[in-house]
Image (tube, rainbow, N blue to C red; front, top):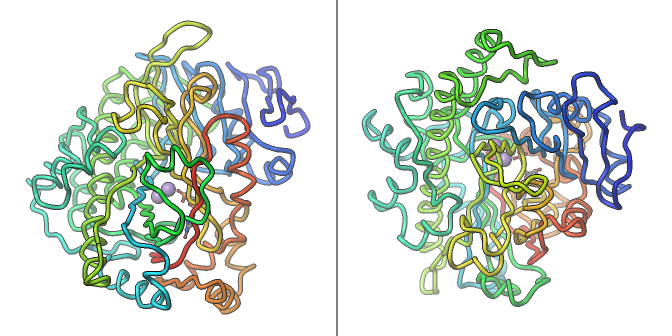
Length: 479
Ligand code: 5GP
Ligand code: MN
Ligand code: MN
């Protein structure tokens, strides 16, 4: 397939629909020549062309430069299907529903931490529960859990885990109002009841970083960023609850697809019409998991605020939310396709919303700049803060990449990485990592990921998001 890619521009490549039987739209890859060399060693291009066969798929099946193989759909992908009867597919959202990233901004500078990086990593590790299946500090009753699922961050606000100012700085204000806990299985609820405020395993993290470089002074100022400032990245999702919802509905969709005459080339692409009973049940469940994930990142924010206050006693310990983005989610949105306004079901799987200036869904304080877009790189390299663009609205359903993206599978990374060497290297760079599992850390080694600089350059040059600031890690808490 790779050899059949047609160059559309320096950063966009396309597989026309005739390369594979059943494709309804072209398959598009945003990449530089260098990134292209690393793509296609896995099933991602195959998967991308499969997605182009989804019922109702509109314009193109798209992947970003952080693309790699996922469950059915590639990670780093966008699939928009026609509302109201186009397909909705759990595989197009991912098992970690509303996995996403939040960035906190502090009033402290790198110098305020001087020599205490390791101590801070320890202090945060002690406050924030992490690890596979790990429970948290909050005991919810079943009734309260249902409220979390229905109200999202509004629940956190009512219960003292959020400030009023936080809410406006969260995608969808931290709540999808079509969520319905009735559609969520008892088992999914059981898995989620004690996990609020926990990071989870492996790829999820809390990372103290600092602003290393500013690319756009004006926007950085509006975002509240300045050089040398300490910031905190939070990356986690809906934990066992979201995973169980995804599994439950995957099964249901495989079983009910036939009823709607839907055929897909891979069971992992199982989908049903959005407006079918099963489609609506899933969408309401997905929204519940999304609300849980926003609440989870909010409670973690609260935990960090407590730890920060104690650690930097006597200093200005205020922590604000810059923004919170979902990168595994489906939403009903309006986009202009071939000159016509269309309502679509936009699946973003390992892809970040990148709405441009003036968009009605962009919060008031960022209306002039476009929404903040937060792109983590790896624990040893940089991460980026970007801003959404009008061009993303035109080209990629208002979407961009979500990370550097894997270059190596977890297993390959475990084989390739010597954990002692890695630790030495990181400490040499003054980066302190605290993790529950050492093998988990090697899976997440910087070499397991693509070059974040190159990935960011692609989306910036392609106009899908604009570089605002670069962050560098200081202390990382891993699951
Ligand atoms: P995913 O959601 O696909 O698991 O991860 C999103 C992105 O986070 C990855 O593509 C990778 O670039 C980035 N990432 C993974 N681990 C870390 C980390 O420890 N620190 C930072 N800053 N980024 C990470
Ligand atoms: Mn994620
Ligand atoms: Mn996740």
